[in-house]
Length: 315
Ligand SMILES: Cc1cc2nc3c(=O)[nH]c(=O)nc-3n(C[C@H](O)[C@H](O)[C@H](O)COP(=O)(O)OP(=O)(O)OC[C@H]3O[C@@H](n4cnc5c(N)ncnc54)[C@H](O)[C@@H]3O)c2cc1C
Image (tube, rainbow, N blue to C red; front, side):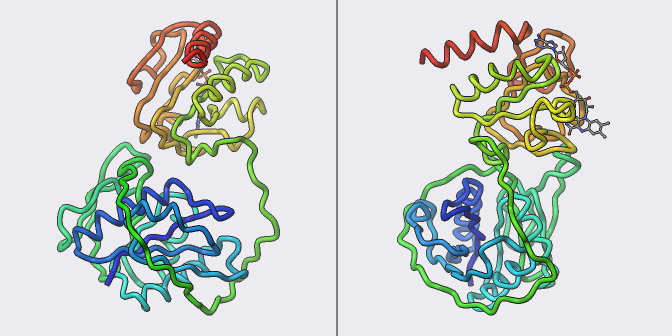
């Protein structure tokens, strides 16, 4: 009997959101007095996982599972669930994990809830709190099936280190066929991915044009941040669509979100409301974004941003 975490990786590097899923999984396993098992696909370096209390790591080393497929991965994980007598599967909140959760729940006829923000108060009944309506409300949901699948909202639990010396095993599976075949994958440009970023510096139409993005990039460099933008900015082709944040773009759950020259329309706020600290720089004191901000700077972005970057670089 154990808690199982699907540990996402890319080129043998584990994603930060998976360390958070492991931290949650460990705390849950301790509550349930169970062990913590992790499943990885095609990985060879497990060193960093030792910091998160995993008791056993199952590696599925199979070239047919080189690229993510929710159906094939769900089938592989369902074999692990049977063989290891898994009670709870913990996933991160990445798009892959959400697809996987839905597929796995169908395959195993079990309950799946996404966007979980806390540990359950009790194990029986197993009731969790989750965000809903694009983070505007919370819902309390009971999982009633024997096997339970949860995906954890980013940055809600944090990273909790607990040293362990996990047993590492190769797990053999029979790969099922799928009616989809990935022909190629094109990676987005940009040094830091918005979804995994701790800090995001985002610009809106107030920046007047793409030629002014140098100051956004300089501030982002000084902070080690990812860059993002509002919808009109990507619609006008000032920035790539991969940077568009909001209801129709990407959700951002960073620790710090800096919005520069963005008015704060409801569709934009919907995508960033789970970010922890929001800083707004806008020259209109009545901009709606100030209502959602933790810190607000009223003034001209073309003066404030270079001055802020200079101070940060000096530190
Ligand atoms: C169905 C639907 C879905 C949508 N989805 C999204 C979405 O996912 N994401 C999204 O972002 N939008 C979305 N939108 C659009 C949204 O409603 C807003 O129109 C958009 O967010 C506005 O972008 P903005 O804040 O960059 O531009 P604006 O509203 O034009 O705001 C520019 C801001 O810059 C400030 N400013 C101007 N000059 C300066 C300066 N020198 N220094 C500092 N500040 C300055 C202004 O005061 C203003 O507040 C959606 C709309 C619809 C209808």
